[in-house]
Length: 362
Image 1 (cartoon, rainbow, N blue to C red):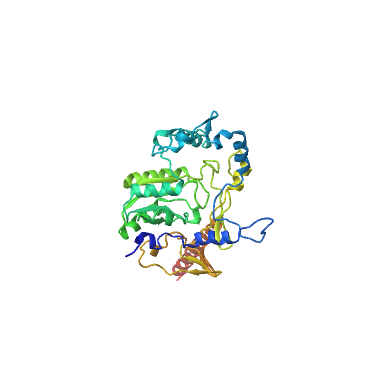
Image 2: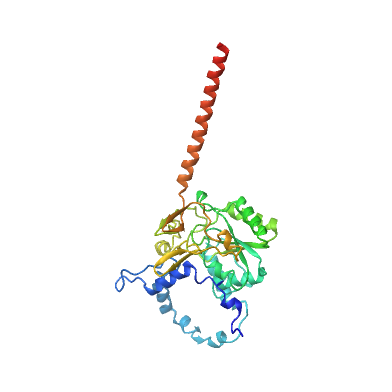
């Protein structure tokens, strides 16, 4: 008799993807300026490690917070007993005020409509359980955080269908891309329950434009589906800024340059604290010091359509990896095409004129 369920023993957890294997390789040989200057630098995890001195300084000046006290009196008993399943009211109130502050007080949040979870991973998975049945699908713009294949799919049974976005327009979401993804889901026999976006984008770091937001609202309204906005990085850059991020290829990984549009307060700290995640493909695997391309899984209908990195222009650098084509190249091709077409038209008209005159002379 099996001791564990099929869900636990299956490989649907996604932990063997190149993204998480990269984490393991980093943990074996982490960089240290003094102890290990030739070690690996973790570029696949967005963590603000530059604010530790600020936090430690604040805790030193506010010892009651670290010792679970309020006005010098212990509040341990309040915290240790059962709490509201949606989160402590005081904590929700503080969270609402904090989210309003980092958004420049341009928006307000009602603490009574906030549900707290142990991080965005558990929040996203909980939403999948609440909104989708096993086999239902959510549409996600590409490129997206590789961990979503684990967070959204593994235990919930939900599926991901990519919204193919192109580097030619800065990976902005278009109406045609939304419709194509919706139709693709139906071809695969999947019921679409919603669209999930990260704003600012993970891994690009760009913010959705007003046009994209209006497009998404119109789309989910017309289809009567849900919209999930993962805004875990919303406090790391100034909002409503222009798309200044230009992706580039670095060591076989597509990453994004940190945007220069940052909050005035602690701008330098926030700009350098932002760390993009590498754009790995789920079909790349690192093993025994080498990258190999995994075969398509015919039993996975979503995997057959390349669930994450769907850009058509790829380079072969030992293995096939996702790369980004600069928009200037697309513009040059467009101008060249128009020029050739125009010259061809002029040539045809000139030839037609000569032939017409020649026939009249005869």
